[in-house]
Image (cartoon, rainbow, N blue to C red):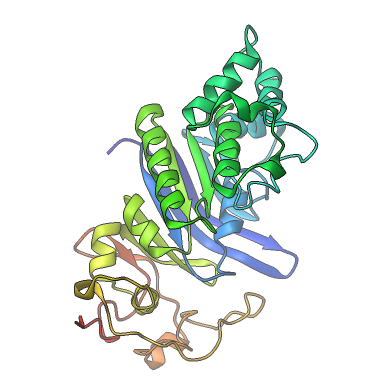
Length: 319
């Protein structure tokens, strides 16, 4: 396999006494879509911000095309911005309300001097790539629907001609039909432009549909990672099993017995000793409270951080 376009190695992100991300390692390859999944507060958005250069790494390295950009020096920040762009969860909030769509697209084009000859024509071409007409150039963000605002935000991201797009909940709040259109657009752009996506989402149905691989996060750490088809079919970590068991599906052949986790998500300011999931785990043993499991490979190519992978937590099919 070729070298990854992005490698986060043992990365940590801290905000004061809170460690939002602790020892996370992920790779992203050219043309690949990697899903990042977990409960709210698990550290997904902190990883997105760190990879996009909006939050400094407290530890670890971040390699983009083999170059370590974790130091955050000026040259590295420009190198990072030219290759990695963040598609924000709230597209309207990420767009200036005082600028028209045309101005929002023309501004980064002029700054980067990408289309000096015909900036306005380049903005029109970007909109057409998003499935929007020239009439949208004169509109303001508040005049756009949720789906239209996401397309404009995506067009603005593409002005940088990035290799990697970090998409933070890109379909949240959209109707199912609009959601499907957005996913088809992202896939088409990936294939045509050779993009790689880090795809962050709570929607497991969406993740299962668009990602090649998936990484499951719990309380700032990766607990399982592997090919989406393998992991969704037969999850190895008890947390992954519980997460997938809560996923609603209309297909009776894919329904699982619901696993209800006990207790609340612990505070990242005071994480449990040993395995961070052991207080809520249905198969926890004494070792889990004292020894932290390492992310270790399984025979099917994925990796899991669990002392007892593929055990307990029944996944019997119903229907």
